Image 1 (tube, helix red, strand yellow):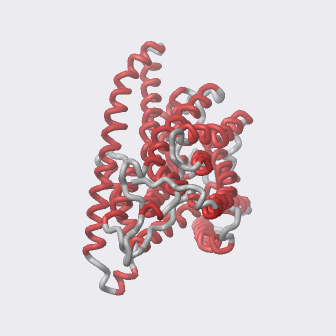
Image 2 (image 1 turned 45 degrees about the vertical axis):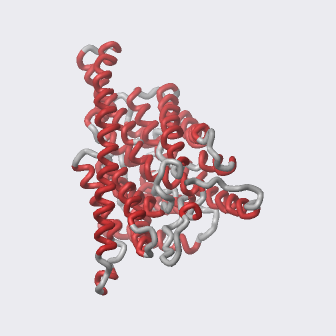
Image 3 (image 1 turned 60 degrees about the vertical axis):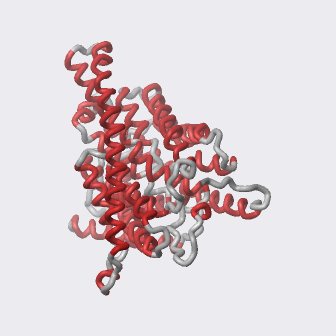
Length: 449
């Protein structure tokens, strides 16, 4: 059987699953992404004579495939958020981004360095890749689709609960804001190699690290984030002017309604990356600008639905391939220590860092606990790892720590997250929604201006 024919079979089954499973398993305590992974395992276990996908051997393919899924998901996430953009209204997101994510990176890097005996640069990379909440796989606890009320004033405070808003906003922004830490690991790897080649001493490494840290902060933190924000604002505004200034007037135009979401995604990402900004941030900001350009318009539903459609199809294909990597032995380098650190990351590090980030919040304690615990790890983490390992410095660091070991650890973390978060999220969210309904007269929900 030809490889091309098998590829068509894989893609068709992935698309069919993306369409059918939400209908069959609606409101069931089941993780759709986990089913795709299991389906991929079953498919690649068949004696078809096709080798299982291997991100270690094909890191460039892994990088660009996961990159495409993430940027489409970021557009969909941004279009969901109906809350006005101001500092106080977005406080739950700032807490997760400014406190929880750095603490998670620091804790995981410490565990990687101390327990897994990783090179310091690799330990920082490990913390950076597992810290972000994935925008692709967080669908169970994400905000609702955009409101399409055109005959009444939209009340943003009623559009989503604190949990859904916080996790959707976090997933939309932290993929971009984790990038500086990925670059920090890359810089550390490069400096370590230079010091080893020159003097090989700790003093030489420290002396060469200081100017690199200044460059890292100035370029990879300040400049690239600023350019990402500006790029997203410009593209979002231009696309919004085009969409709402030229309504569909022909049958062909109406057929293509919603495709502007994909155009905005690719334009924001590509243009921003060309000027060395963070494309992830640009895509999410463009989605926010697009959503808030004309608040009351039914067309946002079409934009959102198109973005989600493309995202779900790509996600299904990637997760089926991920299932194939498991059959191919991606988990073979896994050790008991890796499993312990992976479970600690999901069950201890993220929840504790999340609770610390919620200190002083006016949200209900039940909401704070769910927000702290439900940071699903997924395809975005795959992208970061592939991106870093494709750089020259980390190709050399592989002499210190095999890339296969990092992929094995990350694959386990994602599988564990899909299982724990995916299966429990729907029942937990349904329970908290019912509880809030039953006790709505017992408390007054905080109003965010």
